[in-house]
Length: 198
Image (tube, rainbow, N blue to C red; front, side, top):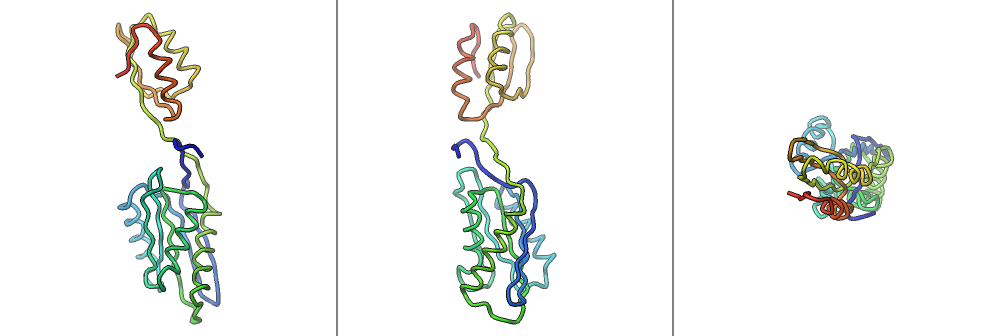
């Protein structure tokens, strides 16, 4: 995957896992910020107020450098880490996965818990629609009206999204293009007489 793209999920997806009468209900939720992740956690904690544990992990940002995991009272590293592990092995970001556990009366042991939380998280991801997003850059180009056709020819070749345009004696156009393609587009635009970038 290029550094100007990343994978996330389109909408909330649900997963499920049971082991020795313990039920693990999982949710994969798209989030953009730590505050948003916290809001979602609060919503699900209220909804499952009677559950023994609500364990979770999130990963944020296209560089995937912001992440947290929480065992919510389960033995250390048996819940949050396996959930985060699933986010990592699917190379996802801008995602929160939480797993709600209803205790079934039988202890699962450390390895049993790791398997359960990992499997529940994996099931939510398997049920999610994964989308690839690109990192884009906005470019503003200003040029004289007679050169409109030359500019439009480049726009047609490079296919950026036109964000806004105004045509006067001096014309102004804002286009959005994937970061990796931005330099090539800028070079082409600057070759047009009178054109400059702002």
